[in-house]
Length: 274
Image 1 (cartoon, rainbow, N blue to C red):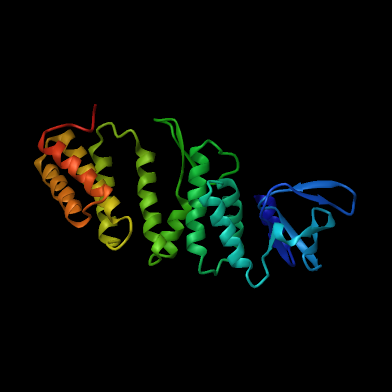
Image 2: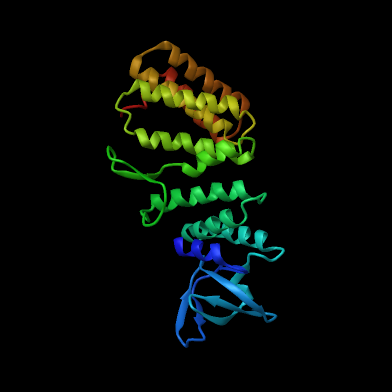
C-alpha cells in the first residue's frame, strides 16, 4: 500500500489496477504480475488499450483492467469497484482501492462513505487475522484479541458530524470501546461509561438507522447493571427502554429482542453470568 501511495504522489496521469493477475511484459523484456491497487502511469491512449509505465518500464494494457484517475468518470468508477469488492467480502482489495480513493479524491461527495468502508475493511481484515501492514491495530491483552483502534471513525465524526455516516462511525466507536474494555469483570464504572455513551448517541442521532440498535444497547446495559447491583433504578430504566423499542419498532428483530428481555426481567432470569 505504501508503494502505491508513493507512485500516486509522482504520477502525471495516474491509473489504478482494479483486478488481479494482470500480466505486464515490459519493454525491458521482463514479466511482472500486477494486482488490485497497483498504480501505473498512462503514457498514451491507444483506443481500447493504452501504454502505461510501471516500475522502470512501459507496456500496453487493456483499459478494462484499470481506472484512469484523471478521466471524467474515474472518481465514480473507482468508488464502484471499491464498494463492489467490499460487498463481496474482498476486504483487502477494497481497502487498497478505498485508500487510494480517499487520498486522490479528497473533495469527493463519496469521501465520507469511502472512509467508513475503509475502516470497515480494516476491522474485517483484523478480525480474520490479516494484521500485516494494516494501520491502527490495537490489542486487548485480557482477552488476547486484536481490534481496530477506530482512527478513521474518529476522523469522520470530527470532520463530517452532519453526514449520514457520522452516526455509523460513532456507533462503531462505541463498539470498539467495548472490545477495548472486555471483560467487564463487574466494573460498574466501565459499564456505566459505555451506557452514557449509548445514551448520548441516541440523543444526538435520533433519526439515524442505528437508533434502535442504540436503544437495545441501553436496555441491555441497564439490565447488566441491575443484575450486578440490584439497584431498581437500573431495572426501571431497562424496562422503560425495552418498552420504548416494542412501541416504536414493532414487528422488527429489535422488538423481539426487547420482548425477550422484558419477559426475562419480569421473570427474574439472569443474562449477565450463566
